[in-house]
Amino acid sequence: MKPLIGAKSISRWLLRLFPAFFIFNNHLETLLNFDFSDVIYLIILALGLFSLLLILGGFFRKQSLTIVSGLIISILSLIMLFLNFENTIIVSFSVILILLGFFFVANGNNKKQ
Image (tube, rainbow, N blue to C red; front, side, top):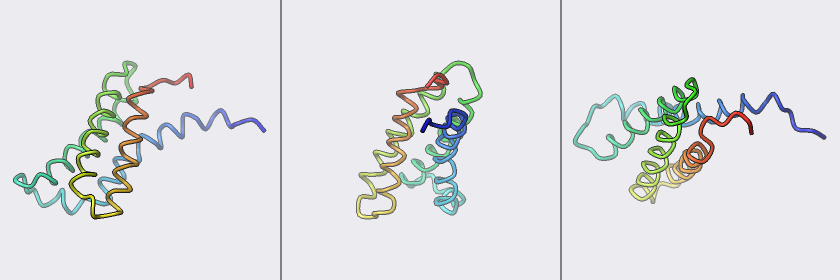
């Protein structure tokens, strides 16, 4: 059985949309508090910003925005992993965000795969 070739671009866009969906779905209340003195708030805010930039990077021909956004998402998710290690749900999603960020660092906007 051959893989569905047309689904590759849809799956890439779903991978781009997942970090933004996860961050705004799970941390919207935290983002609306505007507590700039809290480190967790700043990390979540930066994750939200770079997840939106990851989506925006898919519309450009150059890959730099996608690669930088993926790298920042991976680094910030790694920091979140260590800061919230006792919360298993946050740890699970942090690992997923680290892997998704690394996927876009490694592949960029490569449409040939």
